[in-house]
Length: 417
Image (cartoon, rainbow, N blue to C red; front, side, top):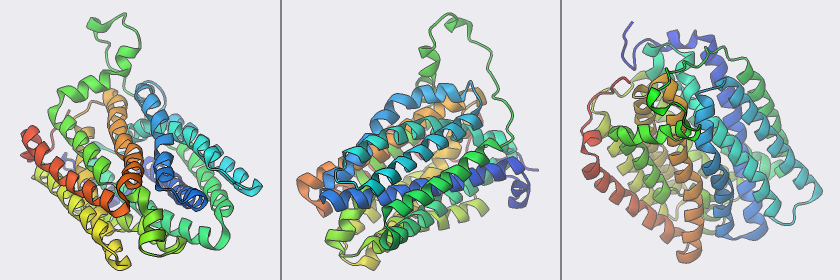
C-alpha cells in the first residue's frame, strides 16, 4: 500500500470501525449544530431585525472560544481525545435543551440566547483540537488523505442537510421543535463518540530545557510550533483573513428577508448552498486527493472564494445568489483540504492537539469574529456594500500572502513531520 497521504482505497478506509464511529459522531453533532445555528439566526433576527445582533451571536461564541482553545489543545495532547469530544457534545446537548426551554416559555429578548451561546462556544473550543487530533489516531497513515476527504464530505453534507432541514422545520413547526430534534442528534453523537476505539495519545519525551516550567509553557507551545513552520503559519493565517473579510453567512437571514424576499425555507437553502458546493468538491477530493501543486491549489481556491463573494454581494436574483454561494463553498473546500492535510502531516502526534488548537483559534476568529465584523460593517454601510468590500479584501489578502509566504505559494507536495 502506498505510504502517501492519498494511498489506500475508500473501501479500505470504510473497513476501519473506529473511523466509522468517528464519522457517525461527526455527522450527528455537526448536523445538530447546523440546525441550531439556523434556528438561532432566524429567531434572533425575527425578534430585533438588527444585522448587528446577528454579529453578536458570533461574538458571544468567539470570546469564550478564544479563552479556552489553547488550553483545549494542551488537554487533547494529555487526556483521552474521544472523552473530551463526548463531554463537549454533552454540553452542546444541554445548550440545545436550554434554547428549547426558553422558546417554550416565550422568548421576548435575545439576551438569554447570547448567554446560552457562551457555553456552546466553550464546547466548540474544547472539542475542535481533540476532534482534529483524533482523526489520525483512527486511520492508518496511508489512508489519511482519503480520510480527510471523507471527513470533509461528511461535514459538508451536514452544512447542506442541517440548514435545509432546520429552515423547513422552523417554517412548519417552529424553533422549539428544531431545538428538540437538535437535542436528540447531540445525544446520538455523545453515545457514538464514546464508542470510538482509539489508541492513547503518544507522549513525547520531556524537553530538559523546559523542565520545571509551569504548564502554561506547554499550552502555548503550539503557537511556537506554528510560528516556526512558515508554511503552516501561512496556510492557517490565509484562511483566517480570507474568511474574516469574505464571510457572508452571518448576514444570510437579513439577505433572505430584506434583499431576496424569501422566508425561512428559502433561507435554509441559501445557508445550505455553500455546503452543496463544498460537498461536491470534497467528494471529488476523496477520489482525487490533491498531492501536487498544493500551494497553487490553496491560493487559487481562496481567490475564487473572494470572486464568488463579490458576485453574491451584487446579486439580486435568488438563483444567482444560490449559485454564487455554492461556488464559494467549493472554492473554500479546496483551501480547507490543503490546510487540514498540511497541518496534520507536518505536526508530530504529541503536538497535534496544541497545533490543532492554534488552527482552531484562527478558524474560530475567522468564523465567529468574522460574523461580528459582518454584522458591524452591515450596520455601518448596509448589507450588500459590506459583503462587497469583504470580497475585494479577500482578493487583496491572496495577493499579499503570495508575496509574504512564497514557499507556501510554490509548494508542490506535502511533507511529513
